[in-house]
Length: 170
Image (cartoon, rainbow, N blue to C red; front, side):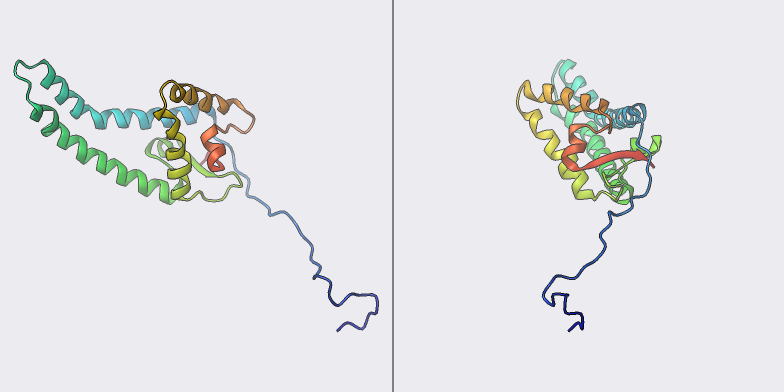
């Protein structure tokens, strides 16, 4: 017990409260974000190309054979998709980067600059953001509105705001 008669023995302890000091980070430019997205889109197209070519050959052949679409082309696409998923998961887990983001030198972090978890990036930035695409017309409208938000002062799209993330220079 304190010897000072003016202090309340039942008062909560007093402490100085300060906001945490965040490390400085530079937001990624819109052009780099677009570049990273474009690289990832090209990789996705290249992964799907064997399946698409096989399906095309099956359609134009005189006797359509589904093994052309789902045989070698489907196998190559499946192996490539699995390899891409593993590489991307490792990169996102380690540093918040897809292959495209790594190549252009940007990464995803929490809005306070801390590391964004794989679950946050996968579920909130990707899965939740993909849900409107299942509604006809609304999905296309949402896609454009989501990406138009990159022109705000924080350069955060709606999917960044949902996940409480930002894209910064790596």
